[in-house]
Amino acid sequence: MGVLENKFNDNIVVGSLDKFLSWSRSTSPWFFQFGLACCAIEMMATAAARHDLERIGMMPRSSPRQADVMIVAGTVTMKMALRVKKLYEQMANPKYVISMGSCATSGGPYWQHGYHVLKGVDLVVPVDVYVPGCPPRPEALIEGLLKLQQLISEERPLTRKIT
Amino acid sequence: MYRDFGTILFLIFMGIILIYAPLLIQKLLAPNDPNADKLATYECGEESEGSAWVQFNIRFYVVALIFLIFDVEVVFLFPWAVVFNELGLLAFVEMSIFLIILLLGLAYVWRRSDLDWVKYNVKYGRGRYSSLYKKSQAVKES
Image (tube, rainbow over all chains, first blue to last red):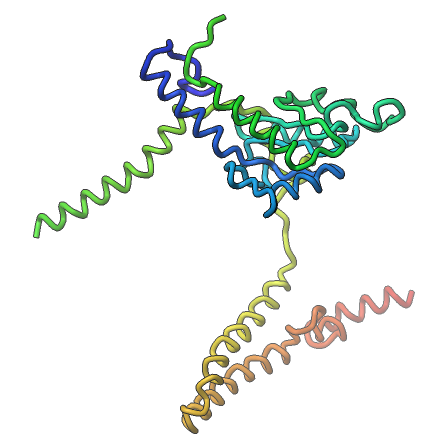
């Protein structure tokens, strides 16, 4: 963890700095361009001109080193699960995961007979926001992304956690 | 005069501060949580295999050098061709000399059979490769 992370008691200075930090994190979470199945088409549509994700500060990056959010868009097969895990590990902290569509969330239509499909990507990586749909429309994904931005902006990275 | 040097000193200090202050801030604020997977080379989620120190065939080097010569030649030829009408005979003669020098170079590498992947002397057993060539032919026949 960071040198100053969770080291301070809550006061006006730390609180303001905390708010500023989480605000700056939440307003530009670049997402990892990572399409696994048909949900990827909707993810591309979301990032493209009509829905224009850059107006909420998000842009696709092709390398996990530059990405903050991993959008798992589509069916996670058993073979792919290992790669998803590795790619998640290779992202820089702080990192977030959005599970997009019913396949990534629970296995979706492959729930019963899909011998090759992971029943939910949360079995390998910690998921922050689930976006339902098969596939979700771009509006639904944007709703999920705004939810994630809200989650990030409520973080207090410097303040000591009360346990 | 000394005041001018003071400006330069100030710029040097500012340059150092502007580089190291953001690095220090990120060192203090950014979470640092490395593990073996994160420090591994990014290869689209695959495990990286082998070493990145791969040897290329030395013959690619000669090909690249020859390409570079004629690449630069084209760079000089284009602006010359654009203003060819205004320059007159002198420019034509000068460019001809330039091209002849480069063509001499081409003739040289051709003669050395650097344009071929397997050199002429090696392939047909000429010069100092003759004894080696005879041996290989003998092995083939037996």
